[in-house]
Amino acid sequence: MYRETEVLQSVPGTDEMVINVGPQHPSTHGVLHLVLTIDGEKVKKVEPHLGYIHRSIEKMCESLTYRQFIYTTSRMDYLAAHINNHACAMCVEKGLQLKVPQRAQYIRVIMDELTRIASHCLWWGSVAMDCGAVTPFFLAFREREMINTIMEETCGARLTMNYMVPGGVMADIHPNFQRSVKDFIAHFKTKIDEYDELVTGNIIFESRLKKVGMLSKEDAISYGCTGPTARGSGVHCDVRKLYPYEVYDKVQFNEILQTGCDSYARYLVRLAELRESMSIIDQLIDNIPEGDFQAKTKAVLKLPKGEFYSRVETPRGELGVYIVSEGGTTPYRIKFRSPGFSNLSALDHMTRGQKIGDLVAIMGTLDLVIPDIDR
Amino acid sequence: MTREELQQLIATQFAGCSFEEGTEWLTVDISADSWKTGAQWLRQHNDLLFDFLFCLTCVDWKTHLTMVYHLTSTTYRHTLVVKCKLNREKPEIETVSDIWRTAEFHEREVYELFGVIFLNHPDLRKLILPDEWEGYPLRKDYEDPINMIKL
Image (cartoon, rainbow over all chains, first blue to last red; front, side, top):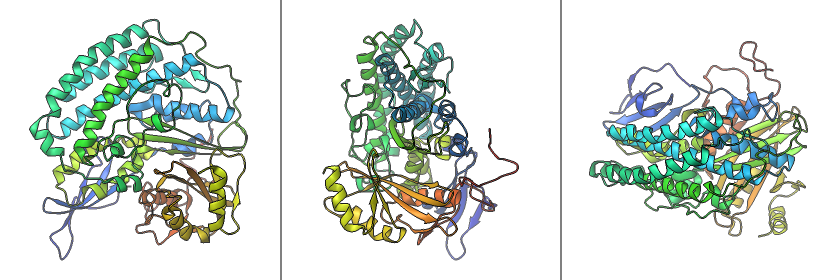
């Protein structure tokens, strides 16, 4: 949290200086406050100060029922609201031993993958902007806008969808849904090549990312990194493959692994994941089975005494929901294992010895979403 | 390794430990004193190699606090949940941030929200709350006259 520090301080007896980056700084993508110790251009130490948007969602959830608490989680990782809701709904279903109808499972997975595309698009635009390119941001928002419109049609919201509920999804898909998704996929298939052409091979972009922000495989595991951050270091950690949920075991897709261990490897993983997500949607969109979109549940949900843990793969990594139940209508304790929090803890290790300008690029490839870290 | 084999092996290291029944993953209750050496053993034993600490948290049971560690092995893919009971008045436990680096941040979070002291932690300061904050917000008896969340 914020401490009364001067904007610029010198460390007595050395050439080192302490400077603040953030909390309001365009490159931190939110209210993240970093206190840097620098020697000239070189970063000696990075110390994140969190808490600017800490809402204590975990405490709030203790007084909300199992139907209500899911809606607070849309505000954690706001770029992947569907997937947050999904993790919570799955955890409640695990406790109730509730079987979700096939139709709902298909809809959930399609929604998750659309969210992943939207989130990775936004990340692609912003990481390019962090490295000095402005145009990609507008291109990425063009595609993201299309997804938001699809979401609005079916869920009635563009950012905080609140569409997943225990037992299925809140409402059936819009009659136009399948057509709009197919139109979008057809559009995006041509555009993703444009993404590659514009940024991937760009010499300036490559030299900003290659051999920058190294994170070895051992360190990635030790720091608890998940998602594209860890897969860029060759860690096999895709929850969709390791612990398949819903219909992920019925679709063909590859887990993208890179062994570059640098920022560029993380970039390549995310870009390839866009294509994988498209292929998953392609396989499911025409095969949504008929039937109920929600299982029959009681009006008041009561979880049996015990502990339940569920996990899903968000665009940033593994999101875990840990519910301790005492048998009542509200959770006794709930913990969200957010991917961003663990990924951020590796930032200091990755940045030491690099230049300040690289810090911005490294943070860009970590894809930090601050409300997800603060909760 | 099956759950039974894992249970037998782990019982050899932690004297007087107990295993919980009916849980998704093997869950072991141990004493806080045996945690540090036990953690090193879990990390290094050739048949266990628990190298990935994916969740670290605490639960306030009003009479005592319970630390909960979720461990998994990226080599063998087995999962273990370790629980340590702590005295609510003087909650102290050894840090594991030197074994799993991710614990450093997670322990700082538990420290400020539950008041658990992690012995030998390299940098045990508040992470989220302001320095002058009093009380431990995630404890069950926490009262804040201004910002209390109650429905």
